[in-house]
Length: 420
Image (cartoon, rainbow, N blue to C red; front, side):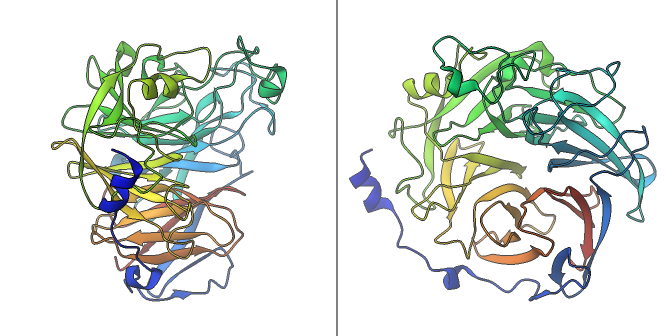
């Protein structure tokens, strides 16, 4: 479909005021200067960078994606990403620890939180990976940690030194993979899930009915991927990687004049070179008609649907949220931010127990946790009062009573509760 046809389909522009809703009331200033919340809500700092963990190691910085799991005696297990790379951070871990790449400082830590929202223990659970950005929880009790990086230990054929200079010689193996971290257990086997594709991974969500895994890619011209494992829950056994094609809109750029709230039928095309030497997976997908998304980031599953963010998509270039209906195989633009006052670079997101999306901002200036109602209305639920660092890793305890979220840098993990 041509751009002119898309413009005819596009709904009339909306204003920030027409989208605003007063859900929990205005934010109250935090006397401790960490996070502003509505009246009736409170928080507790669970873990912060530099603290000594139960295994004697220090809590790494750059707290990013995070998932919550059920533990023993009503405890909640959190598995948390750390988006670190060898250019800015040295890997000082003991050499005898299992690591994918001893030059790379990224990975995950695991936290055990009791019913009273106190930290019982925390420890390293994945080591030697690069820029662990987002990820996602699986129905079989594991966290998929995603590398948002395609570093190699050598300049790939056809690449200039300038293109790889920040990482060349800094890593010892190829990066750009997913890694699985069991929620129960200690340090995970750092085995790359190569069949899921080598690209700048952002986040994943699992369809619990089929075990299919949907993946976002953080590039200005990214694609949206589906991994169909040969055996559900056994990702290291391989599978089929596919990319989304919007029927009748081959190679459509969804950041430009895409129709709002109008479901479009999709198809999936298989990909062949899933572990390329270059960062070229999306180009193979696009030659086969795959849709283009502007910086795909957070994704979550809810009641047969997937919601995912495109950080800088839309006419205002400040963010979109797409919704994919799995059974109907349709995708629609659920929300497009008309300006920074509504959504400013949406990133991680989760469906709350009360039916609203909670979205982390990663924009410019003040950073908020933004609630989005089923009708597409928005409200600001929390404000980072500490600094202008992004929120990340938002998730809810299995009982739905506690929200967990990170302030990216300096790394802080918070528990929030109140009258949801």
